[in-house]
Image (cartoon, rainbow, N blue to C red):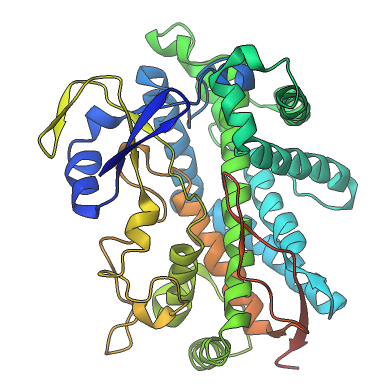
Length: 432
């Protein structure tokens, strides 16, 4: 446990799992509000809207609805797996046609982006929509890079600096990327409004389900939680968070596998023994593929995509380890410190999927393995992310032997989400 400062804002970091569990998980209501960076969300979305940044009853209602819709699509109607498998098919065919010199980040970006957009708006990023995807992806990546630039963060905390160089140029990039994203999402929502059938109970996508819930809430006490800025912010949260994390995790997985020669043969052996080559891997197969799950878990642990976990703010006075903490204090559960704790994960900076395998060959679970964060602010899209990671990775390695002319760099590119250096792969079909 220690304190650090971001400009004039003090942040208390909790670095021990037991401490995080005691406070963030078991006493979660005291840490449910979100801490921000100056007035950045005001500049970004016009206020603390969406799921990531909203607070209080607005956050509770929007998170409840988001989780409900995603759970209904995933468990009740199996929409998630169906739409992921559509992209699995497209990805496999594309990789097989390209054969060599394949930029994996780009391929995973399109696949994951299409899954999310299909769930949000019922269409994928095919050739007719590729320009739209490239604009959205580029704008999102620009935002990720700018927001974690130390110079930008200084001006985020000190608004008077924003009109001065070099701060002005960074904020111009920030506004440009923001405007491109918001314009795209508003346009998609406007098109969706034109075709929603409010008489039907079922919905084809997230935004349609959201709009119908909005209609049902009219005239109730909860109507105030539904407005245009909020819907735009929710869609941006789902699109942005789901795109960056899942695509980058898949890219890191292939990077780590190519740098650890013994892993791919073990993946192939398990896939051939359990699944064979007559059908694709399905979500129902996940418990029968412990080594595949171990590779995914170890990738999430080592990649540690959010080196600085999103902060919380105390809602009431509290005490942590004998220290009195006032209401309104920023708190950060530092997930990275847990994932790299060598007492839990020996040799924490090495890629070792075997650490997630028991002596009997079954998958080994760790209470301390918390890549989707913890407590009441844990990632609401965890279910979709797990399906995507498993189905994309398992089906790619079932179909192909993956190689690279040069081992990818394992050095991380810093950002609000850490990324891998670009690398190319070759695909060799394993079964004719």
